[in-house]
Image (cartoon, rainbow, N blue to C red; front, side):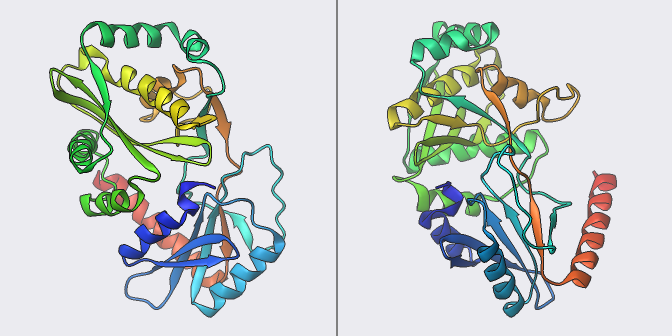
Length: 303
């Protein structure tokens, strides 16, 4: 099971005031469109829904004034997706990246380290030599340190996602179960922090933040190596890096930096089946996508 299909995640969403529904083991959320009585459904990182499930989603959506339900299965692309319903279309606005990078954790630590890119190994050793240390601090104090670095990073990179209260609610529901926090220090100064999720044999790199201080110490490289070792300690068989560009990516793309960083750990580029919309109200679906496109154009020029 993916963390976004877990009961802990459902509880977090409920505390945010978001409607959650479980239909035969598929966890969905429903989001009201402002100033209307209509909703949008979201089914993230589930197994592949069958024809029977799609029909049930369609019926439920109609009863609850959903315009469409976005479906993003946690299934690799080489698994054949059967479109059982003509109302299931490729989504023009996916939420999850089409690609991720996955690391096989069944190898020994020595085998893993040897498989890394030579520059990655060099940076890990440099960080260790210079005195960078990594500690797991999966507690309230660790969360506050992580949050500070995370929001420093989003501000620096001009990426504005969820606010502090969102992250705090997620942490409160996933701590001591799914979520773990690792922090890299130099002379007791936090330089980098990761929030990692572990569930059912998979560890996920979900959120990260770095400081502008001592960037030459390569703390992030050592932190990722320690995250990999933590995954093995927890019993993970693989490490899902949560998202990246695909292979042969454009070096000028804004995501190229962290894609290259993850690639240094000898990961495997993995493509998902993608994002699909189960269209329940075709007319309003067309209007919604038109307005969404106008909003994207506005934000692009505004930026």
